Amino acid sequence: MSQVLSTWLTAAGLLLLFALGMGLTTGQVLGDTAGQLRGLTGAVLAQLPGIMVISGCVTAAVGMLPGWSVPVSWSVLLASILLGPLFGPTLNMPQWAQNLSVFTHAARASAAEVTAGPIAVLTVLSLALVAAGTVSFRGRSLVLPA
Image (cartoon, rainbow, N blue to C red; front, side, top):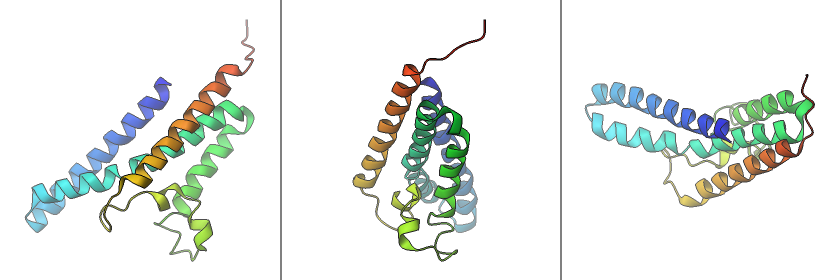
């Protein structure tokens, strides 16, 4: 569980560093540094629940499918990126395929108002996946070398 928490905190830290860099840069160019920092911080943190769901999928894969955890984990990550709002429309993916990405359901803070619904659903889903993966991992019979 501490590895998952570490992953979430590191992701949040990297998102905040990105917002800081972008906010300072755009603030210097556009003249409203404080406003840019506020807007970008909210926009990047709205993506955190999507990252948490991917982390939960990885945890569940390690716990439930140990032999397949690496390809499943990479597939979930690549599908979330390629099918999501960044590349999905550009690649002319059908809407049902784009809906498979967690980032399609994450709030787009810069383009629309952020509501608590999608953030709460993604957060609960990530917690459920982590719980399932943790329970499955603890229930495995691991044979360690002597």
